[in-house]
Structure formats: C-alpha cells, structure tokens
Length: 440
Image 1 (cartoon, one colour):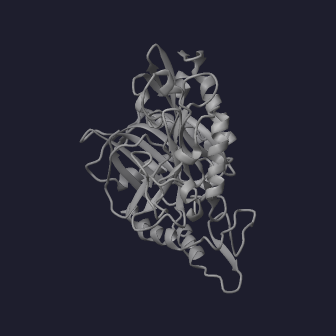
Image 2 (tube, helix red, strand yellow):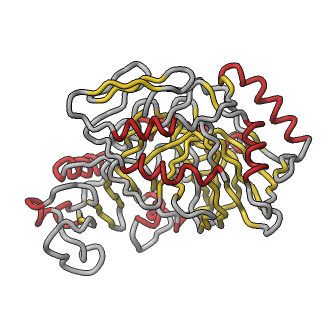
Image 3 (tube, one colour):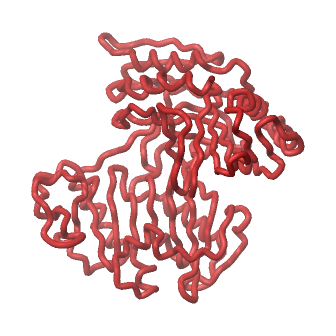
C-alpha cells in the first residue's frame, strides 16, 4: 500500500543530519549544498569540496516519488471549488462529504517541504526575558532570585523546599547553567515557562486574581480555571458575538485581532520568516458573572495553515511514524491583552528544503487515492477538509536535526463503522497516507 512506502525513506531523511549544511531555496540561497529544482521535480546539485551529500540524496529520493498527476495550484483554484461542490453531492466508496466544511486555497501560490527545528536560549538571555516580561505585566513584587527555577535537569544540585522550590534555583546555580530553556516561575501572582524559542507558557495572573483563587497562576495557562465553556465553534461563525469580559463587553473578532497582534509582535522573539498567526476556533467560558475567550492558535506559512489539535489520545494504524500538530491556546478576559497562553512559539525555525512547488495532487485525485488505499473496514463521514502543513515524525528518529513538515490534504471526520473520530493526511506531492483515530 502507498502509505507504507515513505516510512523508511522519511526516517533516513530526518536522520541525515543537515545542521552543518543547507539545501537552497528557490532563489538559490544557501551554504555548502545548493539544490535547484525544475518544474518536473528533478534536481541538480553542486557541493563544496568534502561535503557529505547524504541529505540531498535523500531529498532527491523523495522528489522521485512525486505523484505524476498533479495540478498547477494557481490554475486549480476555481476547479477546486467545483470539486468541493461535487463531493458534497456525491458520496464516494469510503468517504462522504455531504456535511463537510472545505477550507479555502485562495491564498496559496506555492507549496514547500519544510524543516522545523527548535532554538536554544542562553541562561543570561532567558533571565532577561523573564525580567522584562515582569515589567510588561506590571509585576514588581517578584523576587527573581528566589522564584526563578530550572526544570531542565542541567543543575547538579537540587531544590530547597516544596514545589516550586523543589526545583533548583537559577540564581544559586547560574554559573553552571548552559541553557535558559527550562527556566520558570510559578506563584499566585503570575507564571511563566521558558523554552528555547521564547515563552512557551504564561499567565499574568488576571484570571486567578479575578476568581480569588489561592493557588498557582499556572492553572490559568493550562486551562484549569477556564473549563466552564458556554459556547464554542469556528471563529468565522462566532466573530460577531460580544460577551461581557472583566473590563466590559468585547466582540469576539476584536479579541481575536488583538490576540493575533500579540503573538505576531513576538513572545518575545519575532515570528519566523513567512509565518503568520491564524485563529480557527474559539470557546467562550464563564468566570463567575463574566466571560472570557479561549482562542485556538496555529501558524500559517505563506498562505497554508498548519494542522492543529486540542490534544487527546491517539491510535496509529501503522508503525514507523507519528504526527505532530500545532497545539496552542490563548486566553483573553479583558480588552487589554492576552492574559494567559500555552503552546509552541511562532519564532520556531522553518527552513525550506529544496525549491518551491507550484503543483499538487488535486482534491479529487486525493479522494480517489484514499478510496483505493484505505483499509476495507474504514468508512468516513468527513466533516473538515483543508490543505495544511503537517509535521511527520519518523518513529525511530530524534528531533535534534529538525522535523520534516509536509503539505497535505487533511480529512477529519468519523469512521461510521466503529464511530471513532479519524484524521487522515495525504501528502500532496507523493500521495503518501498517514492517519490515526483519536479522542479529545
């Protein structure tokens, strides 16, 4: 079956070790290795003397698997709309689309193979970020020497009390700190967790304070204090709603726009090149007599959004890979700013591998492939279809060299045979299939 072909190749692709050499983008920029790609997917390369070309070879092996029947993206946009209407009216052998929401491809011009990699931050810079953040949220009564702790395990000595003081003090062990990724503070006033690309999670304490909770502010960022959801759905459907937040009534759309600007400004580092902030969903939760908004946040790279998830259990049907999707929630409870969030950083590095592609497998052809390749005992009522970027992680590989991100058609729905939720990804370059069932 087609879905098995890529697993071994992808493992090698991930493990080939590109950190000391780069594959150029379409404009030919890059260092030791340059790979230029023609319209038919063929590659030519030039290397500096002594350069290991295994990584480029694996990329070329991937390109050779490109599906023959692809369509030009720009010319396909109108046809795509026609195909969505056709699918709504006519169920296929294993997939039904009569109640499906199809994402737009109007903003898409090119598609890319991407490599995503995590950054690092020095101890000195991490300390500075925390100090500046405390100033920004107006908190002046935090003793950083006491409160800032390290969860990375890099310290030889332990903590000096109960949580969070059972973790090593950064101030007392600063001389041996090799990284600031893992620094955190968690008090009743506020909470922050640092990762290599900046702030991973934070609460300015607004929710905890309003609810008069005698506990750690981290519970705001983790969603524990915002579980009383009264309404939820797509942002496009709810953006005109207006609810009474802590400081007055705020329209959902205005709060969403504020949230986008907050993350696009950087937390604290700016978005990676080509990355925008997208908010597909919102939940409205109650805070005693007031309300707040929980926004699902994801990245969008040059017109194509990233796949996202709210978490939950998964069951993969094939060994050899896993799927990593954006997972980030931001909480807004006033008209000023984001009060809490947890999730990836938009500053996370994204590099193009090889040149851009202007042709992909059409939606109609993708459905044909799925009808042919999916197991006999799968029958899906599809609720969502979207062109997305999805991170495919080989099961036996490390993410030290980065993770490969592929453009895919995403099909989300319910397997009507066993009533399980199912998500399917089809690589729009090769036709490879990845899927899992899940619970939320």
